[in-house]
Amino acid sequence: MVELTPQRVTELKERANLVRQGIIRSLLAAGSGHSAGPLDMADVFTALYGQIMRHDPQNPEWPDRDRLLLSCGHITPVRYSAMAYFGYFPVEELLTLRKFGTRLQGHPERVTLPSVETTSGPLGEGLAQGTGMALAAKLDKKDWRVYVVTSDAEHQCGLHWEATMTAAKFNLDNLICIIDRNFIQIDGSTEDVMPLEPLADKYRSFNWNVFECDGNDIVAFIETVEKAKATKGKPSVIIANTVPGKGVSYMEGDYTWHGKPPNKEQADIALKELEAERERILAHA
Image (cartoon, rainbow, N blue to C red; front, side, top):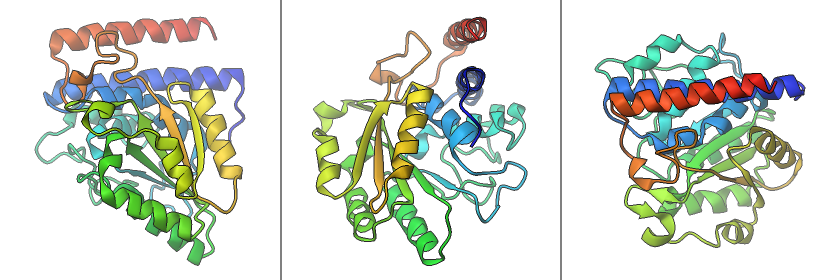
């Protein structure tokens, strides 16, 4: 892993900013899609692709790569933008999001885009798929890891908890579940629609290692992942507390941006704010 120097931290923060700009541009071009979740997970995906995971954009099917699964497929603009800014395909291709015939479908599709491990759509499936992959790695005596990004609201699905039991049964310490804990879903707050708390205690009762961090703090998230990787004998979950719509003032904390894109005027405001933040990041380097 690349050393996390102050210069490296600045590079990652700038990259996360560019990932957010890519999300806005792709959603504007598509005219549909989800805004809040992708924006709040830009720091997490930047950390995964830029610092944490073992992967190679020039060899996306490398057998020894770490596996990254996106269970909540509707936030895929953040995955596409991160992949583009880390060299998997040209950044310009982000403007084809949700277009007919594009590789960048509204939910990630496994066959058309290299390194997308699973086709996701129905919520609650990702951890079950990741559990199977992690178990396969154990059986094959391989040292690659499985990271599964989940939404908090999809914890309302029963299959997810079946996978939680299975992962603990087989002591899958090569499996890390990352929860985007932004407290929103399309109808409002998760705690109003179907309360999830005490979420951490639920995982502990299923015999998982539980970690919490600020999911919009790249350094804190990386340090938390390293702690999870150092823990043996159990799967780990990281509850990444995030602000929905992070980086765009009029979206932050507003659940109504869960499932809609910005229009041209709104996108211009968002990009102006993000570019101003990018300049601040570089000025303080």
